[in-house]
Length: 141
Image (cartoon, rainbow, N blue to C red):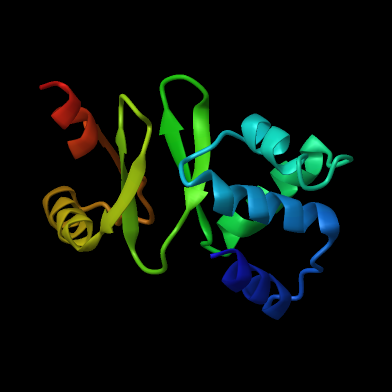
């Protein structure tokens, strides 16, 4: 993940500064959605002088390139996680906050149906599902 992100950033003309590399590394190591403030703290382990503004700017670039996905939750409002290519959406566990992606094909069918029924033209959407993951369900015993 981290290496391919670096290649993509370079291909798009972005410089790979030490602070930006620290953010990429912390995101790759987190393994779960993280808020920008938490990501800042994690990334400072790799680059002590990293500023919060750099974290936000890096996340903005990564999101614009489709490399990270913004995930909303009840607590911090928005967190960020690695994104897979293609039309995908996230489902998050409301207990452990683990997130996984799923294919968005069904959403395309849904939006087509909504367009037909309403006459609207759908220009975009945001879909995120929330539930309880298998690990947390298993812990319910």
